[in-house]
Length: 373
Ligand code: 5AD
Ligand code: SF4
Ligand code: FES
Image (cartoon, rainbow, N blue to C red; front, top):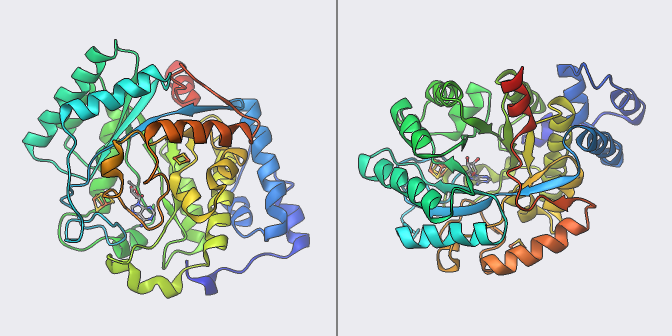
């Protein structure tokens, strides 16, 4: 975030911003939310909390996160596991490790898992994933809903994985503004905004529950970019959103622009405002309280839940690999095993007044409503 572009509005303007018609939110309203001064954030959060309770209820659903592999063919300028970072020790879980993690999720009533990895499109990888999806279903009695977060793939690959039993897919747009997208990705022919959009469109066509999201507080990002991000998610009728603050990683090219960043507490609060604004804008979608929120604030995920999030992704990757999946610095849960994270999250969620949706898939109501309309 270029701090000089970021001027908070004054308190009398803030009052107007907070008396919006929630059924007709405009781009100006969204800009107003983003520019609220700190002492008005609570009122915005309260508005979002009311909408959350009314539309999706005060239940948080679990998605056990399996960080399957940190091998990646891409070089996003912000990401700690980018292909060119040769300080990373690369790993890939074996089939038993994945199935055991899935079993842990099923036995602990998580009902959903997410398989995430760096992006690879080679057929060895895509067929391995296909086999894994089938095996997880057969080994856990078809109880789990499987979300994939494996980057841009061809329509055939998305179809193959769907036919094996994946029902949801997360593919963040990272920034909905093409100018900013270009500043975050190298011009090497492998990173294209247009291709990213096409990938999201093919997921939609294949009837996945589609998730997307953005990073908040990036260098070069302005409040208007964030408004565009929210409008993008709405225009694309996205079912699930995971968005969180950008956090610098010293082994990445974007690190050299760290002087442009908002201080961490302000970046965190901007993340909270974005979650609340999104809940007000897209009332019945699923929104994740992302781990990156907790990297910037010790109660970051709980605060995101209070501000409108209703999904959380407990890490269930075998402990020994966690330190090698560092997309950004200070990532939480790298020293705690799955049992510890489970206990820790139960306590954290209890403080928010939400209950945990054990044994419930917690499908996006937006997706269900869309299908039934
Ligand atoms: N800070 C915050 N989020 C990041 N991601 C990657 N690198 C960073 C970072 N430095 C996010 C991207 C990606 C997701 C898997 O992790 O949004 O889509
Ligand atoms: Fe690879 Fe994803 Fe990181 Fe980009 S953000 S370098 S695709 S793991
Ligand atoms: Fe992993 Fe708290 S959720 S340590």
